[in-house]
Amino acid sequence: MDQSAPGAGHNSEAPKKDVSAHRLRSYIQRIERLEEEKKALGADIREVYGEAKSTGFDPKIMRKVVALRKMDPADRQEQESLLGVYLAAVED
Image (cartoon, rainbow, N blue to C red; front, top):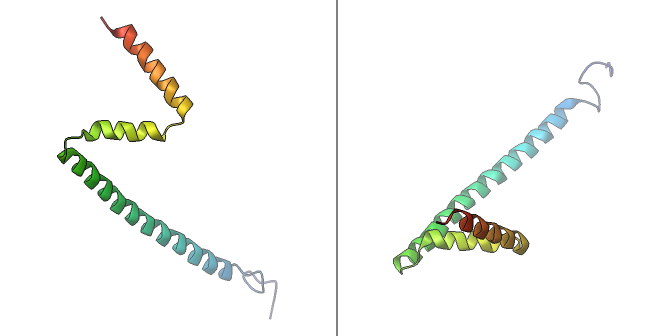
């Protein structure tokens, strides 16, 4: 048996490819499951906004509130300050 032949011996690439393919398949399957969960969560969130709208709340404003609450307080304050400056500059 010639150990110097390509692909022969313990340094063969075939097992690595099999392991890599298995690992890749596992990652892809996990991502697909998470994408499905994300899709379901998106539907749940839309449903909550719909419920809020049916009781008189404005979903557009609620989305703004959620986005602002996610922001770093310093960034939020800077953005609000700039908004005030810009509005003052364009008001008649």
